[in-house]
Image 1 (cartoon, one colour):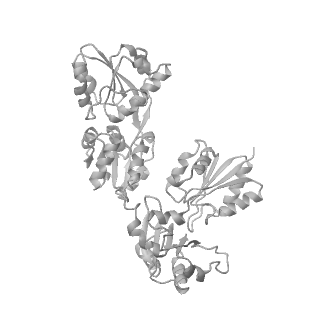
Image 2 (cartoon, one colour):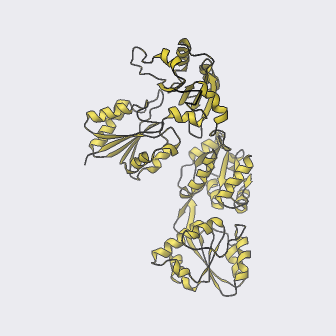
Image 3 (cartoon, one colour):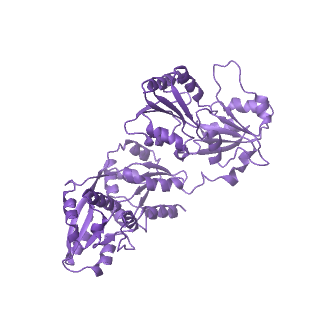
Amino acid sequence: MAGIVYLIGAGPGDPGLLTLKGCKCIKKADVIVYDYLADKKLLAYAKKNAELIYVGKKANNHTMKQEDINQVLVNKAKMGKIVARLKGGDPFVFGRGGEEALALKKAGQIFEVIPGVTSAISAAAYAGIPVTHRKVAASFAVITGHEDPSRKESGLNWKNLAVGIDTLVFLMGVGNLPHITKQLIANGRAADTPAALVRWGTKQQQEVLVTTVANAAEDVYKYGLKPPAVFIVGDVVKLRNDLRWFDNKRLFGRKIIVTRARQQASKLTAKLTELGAECIEAPSIQIQDPDDSFASMDKAISNISTYNWLVFTSTNGVDRFFARLYSKDMDVRKLSDIKVAAIGSSTAKSLLKYGIKADIVPQEFRAEAIIEKIMPYIAKNIKILIPRAKQAREILPEELRKAGVVVDVVQCYKTVTADFDYSGIVEKLQNHEINMITFTSSSTVTNFIKLINNKVSLLDNVIKACIGPITAETCKANRIKPDIIAQTYTIDGLVKAIEEFTD
């Protein structure tokens, strides 16, 4: 089978700027060859068995020479593989994609080019700087800041660039900035022309340095700005104060650890990222099947018609229950005569996915509230089924039994300590790189403590945000003082509490 290489523009950094076609090609690739500027989050789209090859390519530090990268692409294609070559920005905008395409052409291998969003315009846009603007700039040029060192003479027409184009955007030019600015001034560009450098444009780590052509090199040295950065020259830089929209978000610049299970972290991460935070997903728990391999749940489901009430205390419990119900060739019609209670709005929303509207949803999302809400509807000897996690508070079944109710608690999942390397997290905490940590359940607290080897003092200068009072009490019991306790015990409630705290 003939192989094919997709030369994919991975975009400037924000993984959301990957094109749909680029994503489709990553998903079907057998081999993914990626460089320093391609965001590693994009690798999440890869097939589980895809071969990942890192080829580096950052200033003065190349993991692999370009000729060797070309050969890797050729060799993998000759093996009949589908290859996704992820390149930062656009493959043909100083990405050496043309060289790779020519190497493939020479070897007789099929290739396609998937254009990407280039940092030449996107980094400027995320800094609030339009490269063109009516009455300010009618032209712009994208220029390499790092010419081919093998050339004897510069290939740049400095005279025309300096005075003939409104906005100049230099890529990969930080190390060469003294030469660039000297040439611009020598060829007629005013020394006081506004300029800006945008480091890690479009990412949560974005840094913007506003300066002038004359002061740019000195300011970069003064403030310690490092590559990769885009250098923008022109009057459009003056528009940043009015058009700034990204790096002035409420949580911009804050690094937040998200401790939820890997399969559940995305919602919280997405909401915090939307507010500008840099989220570090460090799952402290993972969801696993119950100890008895669903034996008790299956038994309860086989006798489901004997129950008067179903009480769900989590979204995981909902999903696990219905997965087992369906596996027994049953559906929601089996629940037609059973009342259903949900501990909170998120759990109730999960039930709606299966066509069930909860009869009871307390305003306060905790066991005590559901007990109070359900008591008027129960009588002695009625049967209640509670599918839940192995580790859970006993107050709900205990109080119901005191009221004479027959309660069956079945384990439908368990939370265990995540199989996750926490050495990097510990290092970031030791270096005071983390601003906040979120806890979404008591188990995220206890398992996080295990994973940092009980060194709770690492959190002394970190803001601790808890999804509710039960989680907060678990923090306190483990010598961790919570700073934020959500009043509504949901992900949305937690995000709102974080927003209000940072106002």
